[in-house]
Length: 519
Image 1 (cartoon, rainbow, N blue to C red):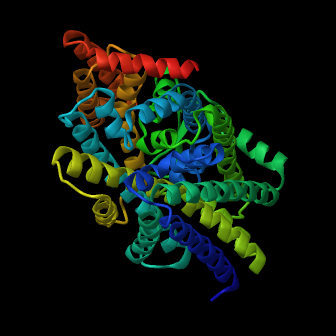
Image 2: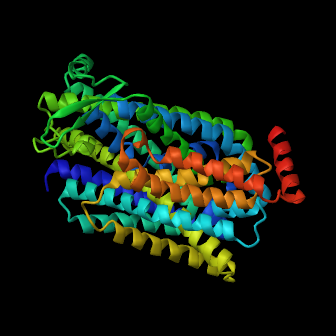
Image 3: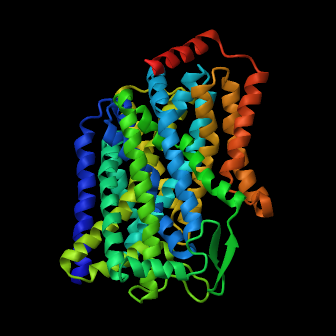
């Protein structure tokens, strides 16, 4: 084995071993299902902030975002980052504390639980619909994470894609099924540190090998409209580029990514699990600063990588036939670093571990959210299965494994697009859970019929806009999250107003939460 591959492999093995060890440690702290799915509401401000953001970013941070910046320039990557940064801050500002207080008041341990408990829906129709939505969007979302891991190991070590994907899935399943929410949260904290370290190393190394900052800046300026926020470039099928105006509608469509945060179950669960709502302000500051810096550096890596292609340090990641491999830019830069000896190869291994961390930190949280929806909300809620604590824990772990297997099956095709799935699933959660969550927390007149209408209309509109309306092009070619989000909100308002007002006990509970917010 070549020394550079050996150095990379040592680092990755140590990293993956550490993740499994954390799962084993926290497996002893899960006394009941509440601990397994919500960690007993014991997360401190740092773990809450960093685990939320690590579970949010996925491999998009070290693959998708640098790849877009490398190939297309600043417009699409920049506006997306701005939308996500604003969405992160607003979610922590408006939703985090109120959801923490409200969910503790109702005793909810999952997002579908909270919707049912908020509106006193004893029929569990609301939680059943919400749980079904989680399964619809999270199983393929999890599959995209497994696929990204398989492609990474396959590219790096020449492993068969399917073997590499299964190995990655087994590791994620191992520490998540053992340690549950606490293991996922603390591994996410470690993974956020690994991501940050990887970003810092690769950008400094890249600038140095690109000939310095001046060379990077001059190259970016020499490419037509590369640094403009109002013009983007796209790769044609013949390997050439064309420039397209990035006007009002594309900007609004891209900024709409930020709306997704209000409906992300794996992020909202971190709010519910926070130990002390008074420390959420500190978590908000940590999360917001980290997100801005991480995405800014990721975009810079793409711009630096373009100069590395120009000066021949790495190969050009697009071909004359229009083939595009720009999402591998960070991997190519890490390979370049690994050629500088065994120690450098181990550092490069940390970068590859960072890419793994991005993917694993999202996949573990998605597995838990999907597992809890099936076992708690569908099996126990809708079908009224009677389980004691020991049986519930066993079912929780078994369901998690089954969902992971479904994810592996869905990811079996190595040519499937990771990021198209992520974009669609993000829109799905944002448009279904987002409006219902905001209405549940801030509108006393909202009732369960309005919430059901919001979930159904948001979910249906995602598919309608994505596959029927958006292909028509023109002004209709906008990210499906925005129109579906608006339609869901309208459905909530109209349905709530034309149906019976909430019972007094529900509105009294809403008022109690409002008082606690001011305390």
